[in-house]
Image 1: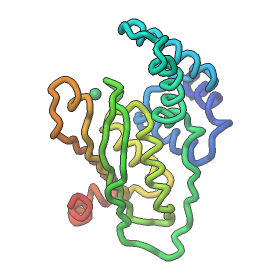
Image 2 (image 1 turned 90 degrees about the vertical axis):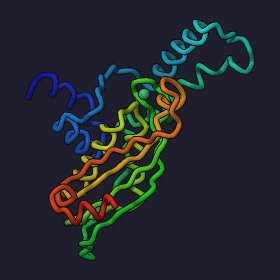
Image 3 (image 1 turned 45 degrees about the vertical axis):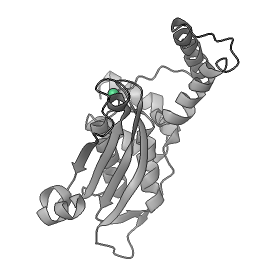
Image 4 (image 1 turned 30 degrees about the horizontal axis):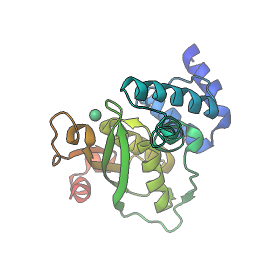
Length: 226
Ligand SMILES: [Zn+2]
């Protein structure tokens, strides 16, 4: 084990559920983890530092932070970043997942459409707004359907690029379900395209990650993609 990897394991592993730890390790192994540095800051320290930084940003823009509409904005943004829209950077927020044995011998594809997905573009820190479609073919394990939505939300609540988000959801489900037969597709509007730059409000971006039978078997692939 490299010193860097040993350090990471010491830093994170003691607080994580086994499911969160195994998902995180699988993402590291595949090079799909979000670039993270453990800075050792507590939640309260993060609030203070982000609020101070946003005070700086708003004042630099020329806004009057003594105005009663603006005065709480830096601390509000700090709490929103840490506890809400970027809470998925902290694996202690990974959803509680009960994977159960497939005693009913379900062997047909399980597919969930139109999972609401709101994330944040890591290049511009503005919203990505879309839906996810997730499918898997049960092997030995099945998972509560609402848990799939929660896993989508966990990884969406990070600064993201859509391609990585799609792959992170795929690998998380492959790891938890102990099967390669998982497929994920995300269709989203990027507000960095809609609200700035080319100002295109109509274009949507679709990204798809296919594993196992979804990649190898044309009929299974077609069933998912249609
Ligand atoms: Zn962007």
